[in-house]
Image (cartoon, rainbow, N blue to C red; front, side, top):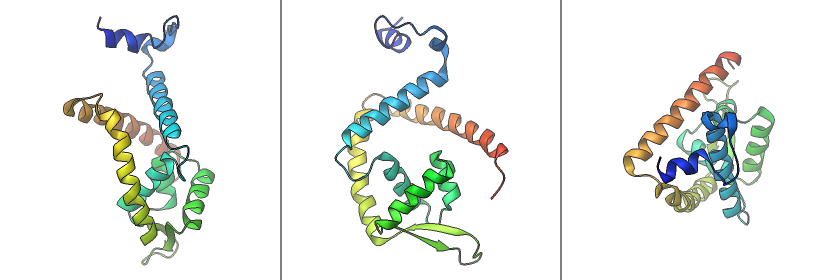
Length: 166
């Protein structure tokens, strides 16, 4: 067994994982919480945290995204997504506009100020991601992203089958 394998199976000396030792969910949750903690520590003096960056990036890449789709992709309940959108809107980073063909539908768009803010956040987040990139070679990184995408897509498919279409 390699040193890396021992570290994964036994994250801290003296801590036995028991049933968690083979739990993919546990290791995904633990890694997610670790990344979230690291990001929050890095961003503690910044105006926004990683969730805002993710929202900015998704809105920038998907102009007109609906609030419901943004919430689903970020795995937020409707009230938390609404708070996030309200905050971004109050800062003049985004605007909500009715769809030009279906006035019942609302889309979210970056303002010019939001585009400028996203550009600076992308630079900062790329620097933050460099630390993670050093843990994997290019093939491992692509494979890891593919595995995580498969996991989130499978979970999303289950969730969507339980949610009514909006």
